[in-house]
Length: 420
Image (tube, rainbow, N blue to C red; front, side, top):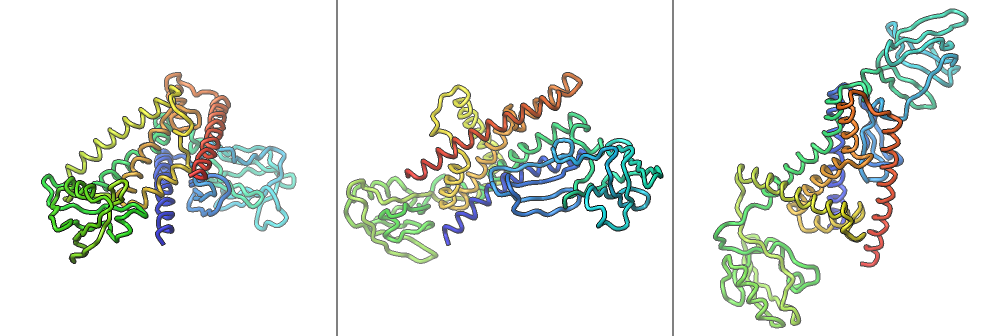
């Protein structure tokens, strides 16, 4: 049962981090009027898919990120050309559906050969229907049906590249921004869950035990209040407890702990060689106040941001070894280990991951949000966009390099797990 819980919590952490990131892109793209075709968690083949409104929500096989596919920024555009035979479904004088195949199986459609077509600006189609030229207005949310798939048309004002640079920048920046907001919230939640150490403690508690160590074998549990050891009161002095343990290496000790309001006597024998029992301690805690929590979340984010940039600096200066890098496998393994320590520790770790994800995505590396913001910034300065083909090639090469690095790091992570 514990293993199932750890796996569930590990998957939940990644799901929340990716979902909140992609939701930032999704929400601000919708606010800008951009047509969002797909909101996806994961990459690769689809495991689950459902369409609500204009957007298809999908869960994909590889849980290594996600994406929001916006109109004008994706390859899934169905081409219709003059001379092509199509079927139209018309409602209230406007075309609501284009059928490109299996026309003989369609009922209540207008069938003809395209003479002229504009589904981006003027929104109309002219058909040759048995020698008669007929013009139809096209609904701005019309669907193109082919091979069992439907694709909504994207008028120019619904495409990513048509909105202002400010709105596009916000739609891109919103992903990392949501990760920063989530990190702040999780750091604050952690302090509320863990509490603050009392200035003059009167109690010492067990916060955890090492598997197979004397403390765990003797039956000490997380949350036990250690009252006396060999008849001597411990109070809030954890150093006194540690001294007594070290002085009793290989010798049985009698501990009295309070558990669920009852005193429980436990016999513990510290390891003879190390003089340790494999015990994690925590002091007496109190609930954190609102302003205290707010300050803690802010200062912790600042401290962690500095550490993250120090780590990234080592990568830039090549002052690292391959074992210093960790991919999804290593991160998942660390998350699972921390999940075993308890929900407060997992919450703090999730905050660190969210902060790191936000910062990493803002780096000016091709295919990341930071690189896309850089191109939008260049467009704002130059007064005209960078050639889409060149920008697309830069992002493609960057993505390929990231995937190659991911494969190398993941392979190394798997080897490390096998060796351990």
